[in-house]
Image (tube, rainbow, N blue to C red):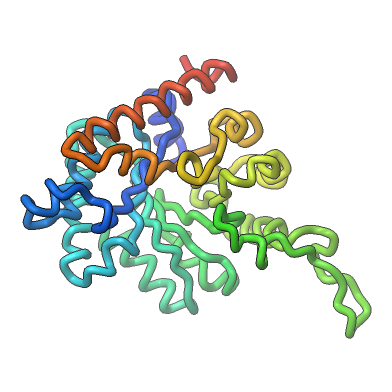
Length: 291
């Protein structure tokens, strides 16, 4: 369990707001791991964690890369979480990148899976079924829901950026008229949770929009994917997205995990994480936030 104050203190201590995404793709895991390990998913994660935990304040396992392997994949995930929880360099913040949501009782089961049965601090949640699908994730003290708001994938433009307009049949403005759909969603979600148990997923590829998003949501943490492989610019993001508590966790997955495809993959992953942490430390110092 990691509260907002504990997360902020961890960022201050490590001078970092780096989240390492654990997306162990069997097609990209080095052959030395696949050939020599009974559990290559866990062994790959273990070496990545050891190489990057000094720089990372968070790890974000992508559940899809585990559950596709059935029960063995879930076992690898459980071992990964146990390893993080028991690591001598811990604690760190953990996020289940599961993107879950359903009707209330099903959402309650999903919430229990990731926030009770498994020791995650947070889980990514889709808000598009409404408040009853999100609230179960907000009922665990010291745990978080990371709400999908403005994502970094190309298809985000299909719905999230659509303007909210007029109900032509009724001849009246729809609540939120004149705003983009993601803005209406974020504003509504703030009625359900607080900055202590809700953060928003906001893609780094929308750096030009992050300033206005921060004005809309001044106090919540942002989980920001899309730095590195997807082209997000770290300094530009931080300059408009940080708040008084830093308020951002910037995720890098492929840029760290697959910095090398050879036996030195963990060494290169550590170097990539260290490079990002050094840039983050400089950003924090520039904004007079680092000690």
